[in-house]
Each structure stands twice: as structure tokens, then as C-alpha cells.
Length: 323
Image 1 (cartoon, rainbow, N blue to C red):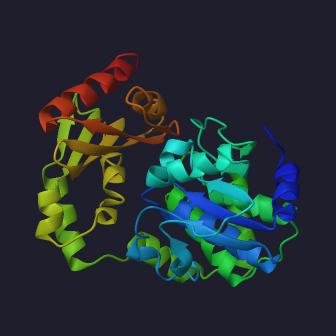
Image 2: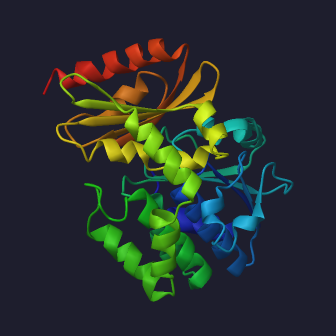
């Protein structure tokens, strides 16, 4: 793996870059991309941010989110991937990335997932509460004078991926990165309100309905919430409205693993896993082609709902039996 100084040197030498994030971007992915894009602009490096999905409305307060494109038009010298553990996580843009890599684009990977495959020519992968912590370290190494736009983006990623500093992988580095952002003008009150507290009445009703039907297995050590397409349509909500549902299960005793199954389309479910620490959910998700962190991971399931539930439950039960 490369050092942060080596990555900084590679990036500063670029004349142009496209920044890719994982599909269905969360606050950390958005924050990383916006902060790095702004840093490139301050250094005079032409750049674009690409993602195959719509950016969730909840992050529209961030200046820079309007610059996302679904397909890059810039024939850039460098392809930079942030907050993505492998090329497949780029979704429909994975082909664009891989084609560019074969053509000789300089590829750089900046990530914090334990499941990262080191899929670029240059890789800086350090497991942290959020990847924005890695980007903050990188910007310091690049001697970028971070402004409020960068600060807001970084703090957005730090707050959202750390669960507002509540996850067990939060440490001194997390707070130092947050302080770096706050010292440079990050709007702490607005960011925490927009990302952690604000919600619509429709989302509140959906949330209550989903939690009312929460299912428990294996002496209540596994909790599963299901969000159907029907319930999202009922309340006219997008998929990003489901963020945070999976975390609720972990507040219940004696739950060790919480899962949210989001129906993407008929016969396809996006599973989000959370663990209190005794179960490595990265290993569970890995059995189905997914991954992420020991305490937070995800994967896709295909098939009828009850069959998906059986396969998911069996995989989790194998880890619960070892406790």
C-alpha cells in the first residue's frame, strides 16, 4: 500500500481527474468527493465528480453536490476512487473506470473499508470510522488550504459514517479530523441537523410502519427490518429515506446483529448489516459478494423474500452460534 505522502504527490502532479464514488452514495462518499474536487479546483486541476445515481436530497445543503455527473465527459489523466472497496461498487460506472484503467489512466484508491481489494495502481486504504478522515489527512499532505466548502464536506462524511461519533471505531483520529473541519468553518449545527435530525412527516410515518413490523430471530439476537417498494411508493419516498433504519435494531437488547432489507425491485434486495461487535458482519456480507466493515457491511440478495430471509438468517446464525 502507498503512503499518504505518495498519494498526495501523485494527485498534485495530475493535470485533470475524474472522482468516482460508490453507487447509491451516502454522506461519506459525497463528502469525500466534494472535498477532493474542491481541493483539485484550488490547485488548478480540472476535475469532475461522477456517480451513477441521484445524490440524496438531504445533502443538497453542501456546495459542490450540484457538480456531480452521471457519466464523465472529461477525458482525464487520473481516475480517483473514494469510499469504494472495489471497482464493482462504482455501479454502472465500473465499466467506464475499468476501460480507462486499461487505457493507461492513473488510478488512485482512497478508502477505509476492511474489504478493500486494492484495485488501483495507487492505494491508500486505512480503516477508520469514515473515509473523510483519510481525505482530511490527504489534503494536509497536499498542502491544500481547506476552506468552508471543504470543511462542510469533510464534517458531513465524518458525522454520518461515525453515527454522530457513536460507533465503536470512533477514536482520537476521528475527533482530530472533525476539529480540522470545524476550525476551517464547518457549520456543525446545520450539518448535524440536516444529516441526523431532520426528516419529513412522510418519512416519519414510513419509519414507524417499518419498525412496527420488525422481525426477531435466534432468541432475539437478530433483528430484521424490511422496506418494500410498496411502502416507499405509499409515502412517495426515495430509497435514501431508509437510511438509519438498520441502526435502530441495535438499540434493542439482546440484539447482536441488525439487518435492513430494502426491496430494490421484484426479487432483489439490498441488505445493510450492523453489529454490536461480537459478529463480524463483513464476513457475513462477504458470503453473498458484499463487504464493508466488521461492524457495518452490505450486499445484495436475489429471490423471493422468505428465501432471502432464510439464507440471510442461516449465515448470521453460524456466527451467533460461536458466541
